[in-house]
Length: 399
Image 1: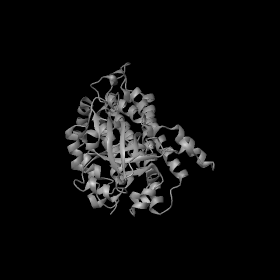
Image 2 (image 1 turned 60 degrees about the horizontal axis):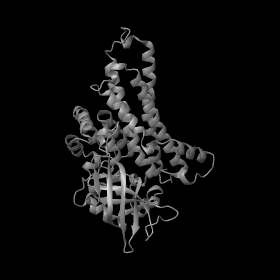
Image 3 (image 1 turned 45 degrees about the vertical axis):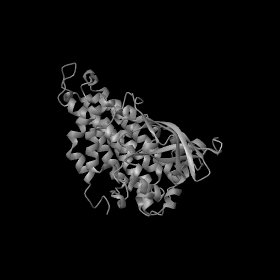
Image 4 (image 1 turned 180 degrees about the vertical axis):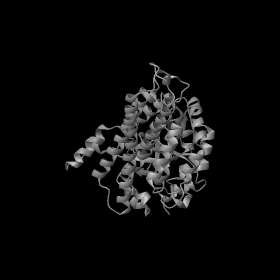
């Protein structure tokens, strides 16, 4: 059964508890992590199960529905939407990991949350007996206080501890007992409520089956080896992981627009004129709102197109993946640019800390700082691909 023929229970829940999610956002910023009430609501909504396999109680939503729900939540509580956009993709990747690790993670409790990040902050040294010694430090582990497992990026070493050549990136799946959270490591200007703290590992022992090579992930070899036949788990990684992050960023901008519209509806400007009677402001706001709608549409249409290719069994080439990433990155920047314009038109009182607009604006700036939104190499690779060239090296990064 697809989301086209069933009720979207996650969206129904989010809408029914919209006021609660919104109220919790301010408290999350104060305490530097999602509140326990927000976590309770998300668990009750089964939001983190949207991309989880059905055999473990998952909902197996299409990517579009996942993105739409992340946007909606982020428009109410940016931190919660961000954590859902990041951590909500991890069940999708775990679905095509080794069956042994799937059972280790989901067997005792299929509702468990998983953290990341994928940045290669660790070194994986083989011990010669099917295990590795694993150490490192990672920044930006969103929602990590509420997670019991993590995907962490690493570089593969040889038995001497020297990095193998050419460099080989690996994703490593580790339980909460293997890593420490650095509590004072998240003091930032935006997305404070995500609690994206540092993680540290010292000499953890990891079995080989809890690792996934970058080729397993980026080129789909892990998906092919898993034997899974569901369309959801054949979609390329570069179309799935960025989706949640960009959806959250766009949703935050949509929340800012909503708050600005509520504020401007009754506002009298410095000249004593009702904003609604100012045609220039109406013109500008209309264009900015249209840009934000376009950013949303770009992201969702791209997700649908890649889904349809995958469902037909057609390979999603590097060139198409690069085009999709360029569309996704552009959508994020378009949304934040529009949100900046909207906020700039709200006058001096919009700067006051007792107005939520400033928090949404700061969170939007933080969203665009994520590495997945770096445009230069993505645009470069996408353009080269359209000209018949084959991008190499760093131009293939995160595509």
